[in-house]
Length: 202
Image (cartoon, rainbow, N blue to C red; front, side, top):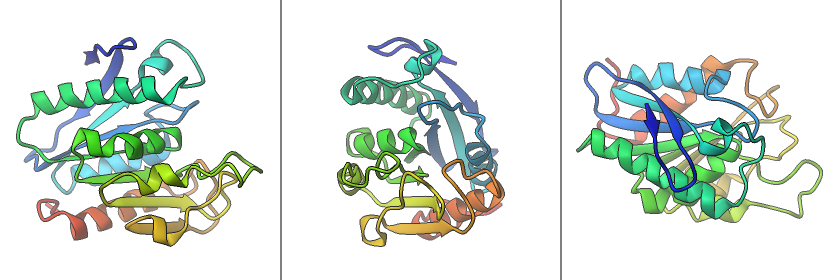
């Protein structure tokens, strides 16, 4: 479904759980899409514990841009998308997340969106080779519990354990988390089931 935002249309691909108990809204990184292996693995795993999953293509990607542009505009567009999705799924608790740049968006907007938890896949702690340009404050300011799943070979860095509700570091994985995406889905669901009383296996 196409959703209008103040910064152009977004596209949401929705997979409904058979008995939906919460809504997970996921998005891509700067250069990737919603069919990234880790995002698809999380979708499959979350459907199995009662989560309906919306994978959102942000306006900048629909325009063909590879860079998201100003964070304020990106966040404004994201909140518009989430508001529409929540209106169409009234009463469902919200979890939001994404990979890489999408994880940053999910953290920055979690409080305003009313998210009960955030899934941050390959959170890019800093640009490669520039640890002094840390983005950790975005993670710390989420205002809700955050699960971070990172690879130990990620050139964008790995956050500190103290800066997330849970940090999972997968050995041998890089920024794409594509060697064993099923493991990513398993880790996400394990945490959601522990954290959210309404997330239950079928």
